[in-house]
Structure formats: structure tokens, C-alpha cells
Length: 334
Image (tube, rainbow, N blue to C red):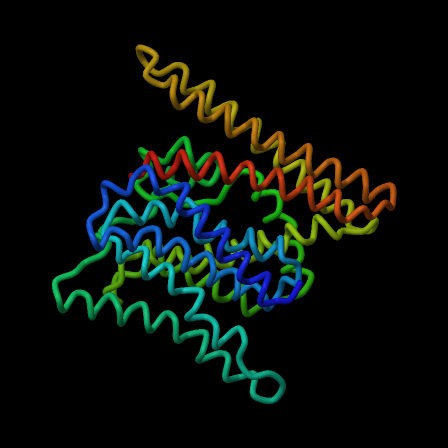
């Protein structure tokens, strides 16, 4: 299949998924409100194209885009002004010059190009402020308790002040992606990630809302999840220890989710029943991911490639998780 054909298929699938998620809520949107679904599609396709720099397989690139454009954080931004998501949606496109920039002797040019997105984001917030538009309240910041949404985003969709994270099965792919990042020594990606995290915690001088800087590390992680997905699908015998580690992480997350679900049952008058159900569902998805990863582990241990089978198992697990989780989060946020 031609590259342009695969890109078109990805774009169409993003639009279809977006229509499925937002169709029940269209009556709530005014004219500018339609930016919300557009932001999701634009961000997803931007991440998909950006990930071509590191990911050769269609499946990995496609899920990288889904995780970013249709992730909990992008939905969370819809709580505020629709233009908040627009800023997040353009971030993958802003990193294009740095990612696909000059090679060899002129690689140093990528450094200022990597700084450029941060400068543009600050400029956009200051420009909006001059017209009295503040897409996100500047006083909102990531709290320690909000990090629990990484474990179970659907369960925290209503009460978290900042909704971060990914989807459950994707955590296993993230483990593999981080291992691949370390092995490849991509220090530039690590620096960009760290700068985004630091600004989201300490930035109080640029005029941009602190939480918008979380877009940068979440973009990095989305690409790593796509890369990790391809890594699981194509892993060899020597990689089996990392696949096993991924399965162990997913099972550990399942146990933690069950513990939080058990704790929620103790809330007075059964008011925590809904949270208990969502935490149990999160644990179930972690188990599904662990089983899928475990099957790949035994295939790799037996030196059996069967790439088509691996792809079917891994992509099905991630796809079902996203399909179920995204719908609940959109309903909770909107």
C-alpha cells in the first residue's frame, strides 16, 4: 500500500472515531465549540505524521496519533475554551522543523528549531491575552493526586483537576518505548520531555498556562507508545525480557487499580460504587493487556515470528481499550 494511501486511511479513521465520540454531544456546541473535535483530529494526524521519524509500521504510527489526539488530556482541555485544545493540537506540527530538519553537519540547527515551539506557545498565550482571551486559567496546576489519572483516567475523569495519562494497555507499550529510547540514546527527546515537565511545574513567568506545557511530554510519550507497539509486534528472542517486564508492569497496575477500587467501596452510603466499578474495569483492561503481552512473550521465547498474529493481538487489545475508555471520558468531561 502506498504511503499516501496509508496516511489517507489514518485520517479517515480518525474522523470516523471522532464522529463516534462527539456525535452525542454536538447539540452542546456553539459555532466555536466545533473546534473541539477538529482539535482531536488535527492533533492525532499531526502526531501520526511526526512519528514517521521513528516508527515505520502503520499500526504504531496510528496508535501514537490516537493516544495523543484522543487522549485524556486533550479531552480534559475541552472543559475550558475550545482554543485551549487548538494549542495542544498544533504542537506536533510545530516540532516538524526540528524532527525533520537538517542532518549531518547542520544538525545544530535542530536545537533552535526545537526551542521554537516553546516560543510560539508563549507568543500565542500573550497574543490571546491582549484580546482578553484566556483559554486556560493560569492558576490551574498539576496536583500530586492528579497523577492517579495515569493509572485510571476514566475513573478520575470527573474529579481530577488535571486529567493526564494514556489508556491502560498503552502503558505496556510505553515501557517498551522507554527501553527503546534508552537503547537508542535519543538524548534530544529526553531533554524536550524534561523541559516540558519542568515548565508545567514551575513556569510562572512566560504568561502561558502551566498545564499546557504537559502537552510536550505527553506528545513524547504518545510517540514512544507507538514505537513500543511496533517493538512488541516485531520483538525477537533476545527482547523477551522487556516483553516480560511490560507484562509485569501491566499486572502491577491491575493490582493497584483493584486496591483503589476496594478503597472506594468504603465511601459513605455507597457513594463510591461508581468509582469502584471504573477501577475494576481499569484492572480488567490491564489484565487484558498483560495477557496480550504475555502471548507475545511466549511467541518470542519460542522463536516464532508470526508478525500478523502479534499485530492482531496487540492492536486489538489497545484498540478495544481506547474505544471503551475514550467514550466514557468524553461523556464525563462534556
